[in-house]
Structures are given as structure tokens and as C-alpha cells.
Figure 1 (cartoon, rainbow over the protein chains, first blue to last red):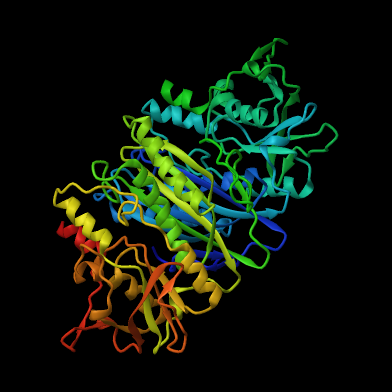
Figure 2 (figure 1 turned 90 degrees about the horizontal axis):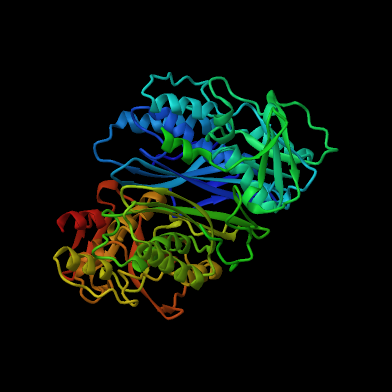
Length: 306
Length: 306
């Protein structure tokens, strides 16, 4: 693998030795996340151009970093490639990954390569946050308000069209093909100390909020009429569709959250409550004024529905 | 993935959030290495028991860490699994990885999982070394002596038997099935300041020494009669066979190297020389007293020979 350009000074030594060497700022902790992308599981060659696949791989890792309020520094890429794959596909993939990496000053600092039956990309993102300040899933408390960034369900709506055999343009502005991880929003929330718990919406609101509830040992209620539904998606996809890579976070009632952070919309959608019993952890308040259970169906469910 | 037991205090938060959180010692740098293991490329299910596959995956990363003189802290595992794979295979794999991780107090702190056509395991090892003290490939100087740990060619000799259809016992003492990464030796050499450059022998002596020569812009000569040939291997496998996971390092002539470190044999096998021209970077001094070129054939060559 060619040496990545030096775009982050935390990387003392990148590609070319047995290990990469990084320097984490004094008083900071290290954050690490890994995400596996496999052909026909996470993407399809006939649906996703290689630039989109490369972008999406890194975006998943950067979104995990955003969800901790972390500052990404460096990434590592392990790549399994089928023997028949064209060089132009590989170049496109690396270009998509590279462009997103440049935008966040994330330096490709190592990795591995092998032949494989399916295109396989495992991405590692390494970042930093001041010691003790990373935003965890486990700090939501009863009475906290629940917020999300952006609109939800847009990525799943595109996926549904793809499953239906429709042609969809892979525009650079598409949150399905080129999701922009909310790194700046996550960092801002951590710096201001406003958010108490946070997660990124990769599996879908119902599943990811359930993670927050489980780790924090709380329950939650969502207001149906407040959920920001993306264009082309209905309420169901907004609640259960995955891969939006928006952030979900909780903040105390007295915290003054703006309704936008760095140009990204922020919407209050619900309330953290005491946990009663786990099987019905999350409720949704319908427009008819009645509460019902919100099962964590998520992304896998919709994939299977096709 | 189930939460890993807390066996390394550098891991502030392991599995269970968007990122793992690690604390690197003050004044230390972070070391990161990734290694991809794919079925039918790096191992075969009919040759390698699952415990061996799990052990070998982590051993590759730990060997890279050893080659920098680093102290391993934590690992991350991304796992792609075919749908028909038995739970007992996965359990065996994780057991093999876990046992080796325990031995070096390396905490499994995260990862990812997906379905895949082939068994796919990408392992990330994170470690630390005092700032500026990690042993690089680029510090070999003319006049330095070349040393290797252990015996060479043993792993390739077993692989040759497997290719020939012979039954080979996967004993725990086998350096092919259960290679012991030389983490203590690498750490000792770094602490004592004796070694100047180091690499692990994963691709084979001829290829890995060529990496040292390339990165250090030097040449080298190996003394044929000094190469420590493993039982069952000949000179050719000792020079070109891969996956021994021994260490190769260089030290100035005046450095007093013991002939064993922590019970591991250390052998002086050659000399770093000025670089003349790259195409014949490495020479070998035959038992007949004549020098000849040593082409970096390595491991891939022997795999293809079958």
C-alpha cells in the first residue's frame, strides 16, 4: 500500500514499518473503532459505485468516532480483493475513502491486503478525546431529553428503491451513497458538555435508542409527531431504517440545546424515563395521544423485507 | 461480541460502546498494526484446527508489535463468518485467540462481525513504547551485525508437508500451528538499546532482510554456515520460508549481544554493508567461500511451488 500523505501530525510514522506510530495528546485518551464492510452484505457492486463504497467504509468508522465526541486522527485499512477485480474499481474505492479522509484530516497509516472471494474492507479509525470526556451510551438519566441530528430514514428509503430494482443516482449529496459523519457536531456537544449520552444511528433509531436504554438502564418515550422524517421515507423507515449516520443524544431538561449545530438540524424527539421492565423499554406516543411499544426492529428487519 | 475480561489496565472501556477507550502511558507513543487472515489464503480448515487459526491471527499482530519492541495492550477483531460454519469452530477460534491474548495481557476491546463467504478475521493490535524508542526498519548502518532469534524454516517445512498431503500433528509446541511471538525478546532489545533496527520474519528471511535494506538504504551479506536451520527444514526454507515469527535485528559491532535472550537463542548471521546497487542488495557467503546474490523469494514463492 502506498504511503499516505502526512495530513495529521499525530501520526509519527505511517505506512512502511511493522507498526504505525501515533502520538496522543497529553491528557487525552485514545479512541478506537473497527468496521467490517463485505460485498453483498454491506454493499453491492451493481448498486454502489466504488467511490461510494470507499466513502461509506470510512464514514462508518468516523460516525462511531463522532458518537463519542472524539477527534479522528488516523485510519487503517485491511483489504481483501477478488482476483478478477479491476484496478479501476480499487482506485475508485481508494479515492472515495481518501477524499473523506482528507476532509477530516484522517491519515491512512497502515493496513493489510490479501486475495479474497468477496471484496472485504475492514476499517479502523483511531482518535482522541480529553481523558474522561468521551460521550458514552451509559449516561442517560430519567428526565433527560432525547435529540437527533438531521432527518431519518433517507438512507433506508434509497435502499428500498434499490431492492425494488429502481435506478437511483448516486449523487454526492445522497446520504445513502455519501453519508457525512457528524464529527463536528459530536465534538461540539462534547466540548460544550451539553450532551450526557450519545450514539450514532447506524442500525436505526429503534435499535440504537434501545442500546442507550440498555447501557444506561433506563426507558424512553418518542413523540411520533416530532420524528424528523427524511424526504422519500415514511415514519416506519425513520424509526427503523439504518445507515443514516446521524447522532442521537440525551441532555438534561435544563440544558439549552440550539435547534441547529454547525448548520445541522437538531430536533428534540422524546424523553428518557425510569426503566420499568426491559421487554417494553421504548414507547412511542402516537399522534392519537396513545402510547404503544416501539420494538427495536432496525435495519436487518428492513433488509429482509426487501 | 461478549465483553472481554479486564486484563489490561490501559483499557478504560472495552466492548460495548461506539469506540473503545484506551489510556497510553504519559511519555509513550501508540503502536498500531493490522493483519488480515482469510480462509484458503492464510489457513485451511482441513489443515488448521480452529484454535490454531485464532492463535495464528493474533500471533501475527503480536509479532509486529514485538518487531518494534512494543508492549501490546489491546486487540480488536473483525470477523466474517460463513452461514454454515459450526458454533464449535467459532468457539475454538476464539479460544485459541483468547489463550494467547491472556498470555500477553492483551485485552480484546472491540471489533465487528458480519456474514461472509470465507472465514475472514482482521486483527488489530494496539500497544505502546516510550516516545522515540520504537525499533524501526530504517536504522541499520554499514558495519552492523545481523542477528536472528530461534531457528528458521520450521513453519514452512510443516506447510510443505501439508501441501504434500501428509498428516501433521498440530501440537501446541509447533511453531507452524502455535507460533510464539517474541514480544519479550523485542521489549528487552528495545530497553537495553542494543538493537538498532528490527523486523519480524513473517515473509521469510530473504524478503524481510530486503525490507530492512530498503528502508535503511544499505546492503547485507549473510553467512550460509551461520543460518540456524530448523529441524525438518533445509537451507532454502530457512532463507525463504515464511511465518517463523522470529525476529531479525541489527546491532553495532561493539554491542555485546548474548547468545540467548530469555531462553530464546540469538545467532549472528551476517553483516550490514554499504549499498552498491539495489538489484543485488543481499549477498550470501557460501560454504565454498564464494558470494552469490540472495534474491528475495520469500514465502509466496514457496506457496506457489506447493
